[in-house]
View 1 (tube, one colour):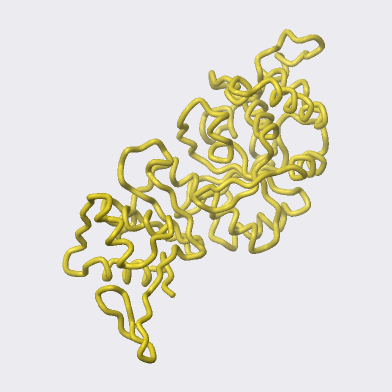
View 2 (cartoon, rainbow over the protein chains, first blue to last red):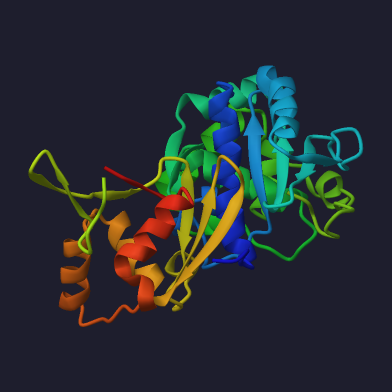
Length: 217
Length: 109
């Protein structure tokens, strides 16, 4: 058994599990978001995620960043360098794929603490790499994916929204409203003509993530 | 305590059959999880970030252990039921399981 070349999608799963272990060992609250943290029923098909995204409880952020370094991670780009919202720091590791550590989602005007606490309140657990990882509720997953689309320059569509039942859509809209993220959410679902959204100019003008040449994560 | 070809050992005159389980600090992904038809699994030790790949017969044994088929005899029986073949050369199935254990991928009790 030599050192294998692990497909990037599989490595992303394993990286989520590794990040969760790092968090668990220090009693740090993380929510795994996007990619394999999103239910298959909310995805069009298989996606080759290339990085592992987590949202850290803001009060635990400093401890988590320190823990990552202790576990062999190296800061690639910090919160201050990462356009457009300065909400994510990126880490690299010799074994794992990129880790994107978010301290806030792009879109909500609620405070990072309020956003995390609201998503944490009804989170569920997903097996990622056969390792239990906390993830947002289904409506939270729809919200996260839709807000990502809102800031992305890729021709993606809000697939989680598209694949959701009317009940789930309602729940996601309510959640977006609670987090004061209505504007970004409407931009994400493509309903830019919605009354008083005013979203298109703001959300279409976001710069790209310099690391991947894409909308970022 | 020595083990015979069936992973059993005699302890105080009593036969004790070894039971294998995936070690606690392991994450792993089956090729099927990514929509692949390959018989492959990618495994990580979370404590030291070592990565492994198991294919074909090794993959089959791994997923059987993951499904709770945990003794040498039950693995052999399941493989026979599946009309599959596993060939680990001179080391045999027991040698392969020993290797997994030494690498910290499975535990034996």
